[in-house]
Image (cartoon, rainbow, N blue to C red; front, side, top):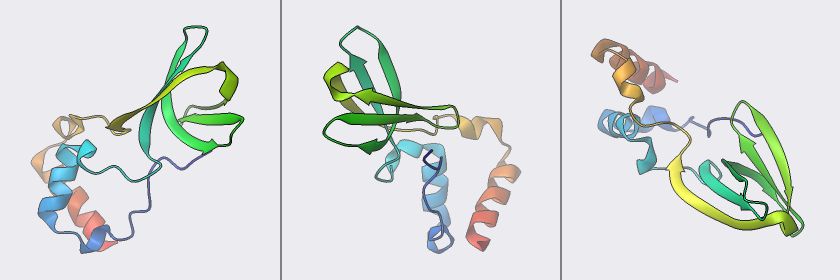
Length: 110
C-alpha cells in the first residue's frame, strides 16, 4: 500500500511562512502521486482515493490507511483528478497556536 505522505526531508529548508500556508491550505501544493481521484464505475458506483498504480488493464486506488482496490479499466466510466489534497482543510482549527508552532519547529529540526 502507498505511503500516506510524501517525503518531507526537504521541509527543514522551507521558510516558516510556507509551512504555515501549506498547513492552513494543504491543497496549495500537492505532491505528484498524492492527489485524490474520483473513479466512476459503469455500474454507477463512485470511489475516491489516490491512484497507487496503473496499467493499460487496471487502476489501483488507495484510500489512505484504509483499503487498496484494483479496478479493471473496462469497468471504469470516468477517472477524474480532483486537484485536492488527501489532507482535509481546516485541520489547523484542531490545534492551538502553540501546537502549530511546535509542529513547525519539529519539521524544521528534521
